[in-house]
Image (cartoon, rainbow, N blue to C red; front, side, top):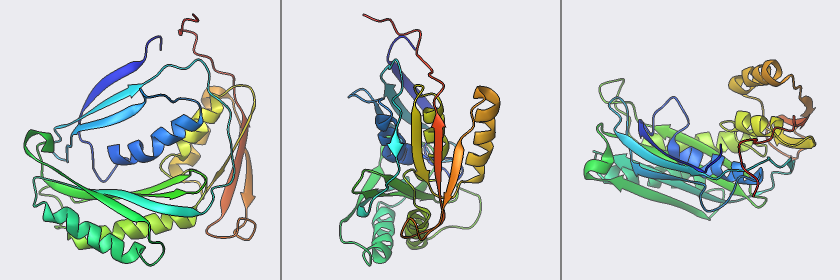
Length: 265
């Protein structure tokens, strides 16, 4: 684009299908910064939350303009140093969020002490149109890798009611599963990292990923058909990488994509 982006999006912010706003804010933005898209104007602001089925959420997304993307060498995820998270509740008792936090901490406290989970209870017009609650957890490593997991309650009138304690426990287990999978980018953002690598300058980019998700595998086929780009894929066994699941080292040379509409002053 020519000018920095500032866009207001309305609808569902948290559901059980897509990555929620919280996850994108916690993981996708730091990932963009690694590729050189940074600055104060890169942010996602949640003005209202919207749970399915009726939605009613609103977010503000701002993003600066860059001419080129930097290549990355991102092969050492590092050890986990802290866990952060958000437990949100809208149009239900504020106690729900606290109950989720308690049960999640019950599992995670066995592994490390530095855990802080914020409770976010939105009232009135900023709580959207449907009731619900959920949780987003992120684990951060010493090298700045961020892995995330999230869960949301069943939409109003669909499926059985979910206990907040169960949801908190399951979310903590999902985070541990994500940590086991490992890599420098979590499974939600694998495709975003590969896209940014593809569009980078004509230089080698490397990133270490956990097991590829089915979405990522299909996405690689799309990259091949759109950009004629093939990744070099090296499997790393658990012994080489010390712990966790099988890892994959992805290497490619960017196509040298350049933002032609940005005026050079």
